[in-house]
Image (cartoon, rainbow, N blue to C red; front, side, top):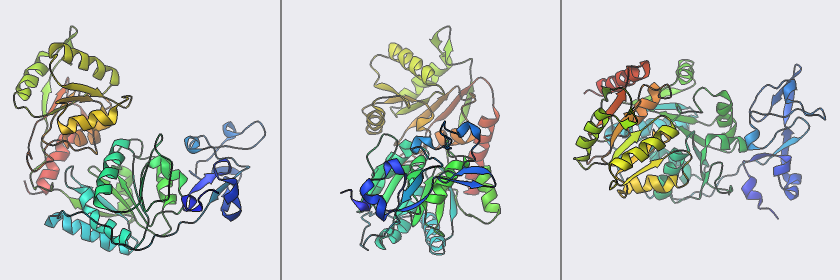
Length: 429
């Protein structure tokens, strides 16, 4: 018999729900008709005739990647139950005074069922500021979810939280492990469509990242996954118009931290103008000049390009010029993505060429960053702020290089630099 516990807090289409548990489950229609308009009960999308099947039933395309929902089928769910209270925290670190203030406010607001936006600069120690709150919930047997739009962010969060807390945990993403009932669930945001009123506390990290930013369907997934009247806390280094509107309406309370944990300023990017990373099929002289100077320092170097094809070409060109370099290229298509990132973190790779998949949620000690073709349309203000934020995160080296190579000054570049300067000003630098 299927273990019923693994379905507590879950909501799935009939074909994914075990037959031997259907008798004990609650059900709701897969879709609801309101004033002649069919609405998906899982993602709240409104459907039209293009969503009608030959036999007459409607289905939802917008959340179909999580299993098809139909108007003539039920969604099955079981209510979540709590865990036994226990002492769970094994983190021995300490928060500084600024972090402690944010952590205490998060506790206070959470106990009142109020949601917050934690607007903290990159490298402020957002994860550590969550530990007192998580300890409070875990110790009381409550179920906590942490979600992010980016799998790399989720992976790093999962490993850090596993080390910090002795609770059952599960990491969910498209090609990941099967779900098992856990007190801590780390997941990419689309995975939340499979939960219903499951979490006593839900935290969403990197809310400004694609595809979550301004995506109302994913906001629905987040909202339906938590228990009624329980808090959702959003974490970000750059806010979004949607979150700003929610704060103006009093739906979110802003908690701001403009200083990094080591209390040094954010690194302000320098812009170098050039004709492009290739000239007559060769790497730019301007890039090579700054590249050679950076390599003399011996610090690891993270090089961003906006397109996978450009990254692959650049990697081969650099390797031909410097065959003894320990260099690698990683993108969303890389087979050994996790291993390459770890090799760079531990120093087995000294230069890592990448796309925006590593713009956030990863920490590399003492790293420098070059952004090539920084004026490309794929680089937004938010992504450039996040990329710059990879530098200067460690106490051992709170400074470093952030170089933007561009053919022209774009609005995104200008806004990113202005925002970094403004956060430094607010921090008193």
